[in-house]
Image (cartoon, rainbow, N blue to C red; front, side, top):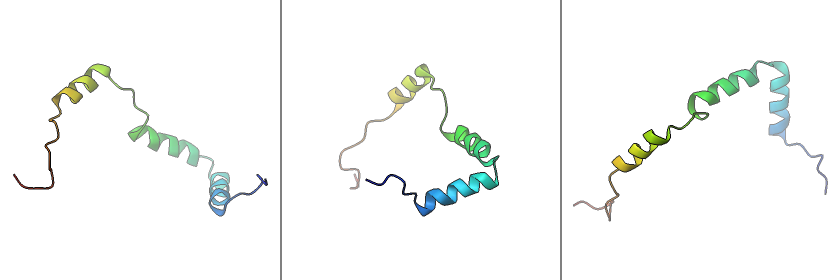
Length: 62
C-alpha cells in the first residue's frame, strides 16, 4: 500500500503553516477558548442533578 499519498487539503494546510508560522499558536489559542478546559467535578455534578428529565413524546404538544 502506498502511504506517500497526500491529499490536496493536507498540502494546502502544510503550505499555509509554512507561510505563517504563528498560525499554529493562533489555532491553539482559539482552541483553548472553547475546548481545553478543566472540569470542576462538583460543578458538573450540580449541573447534571439540576437537569430536568426529558419528557416522553417531546415532539407532540401536551
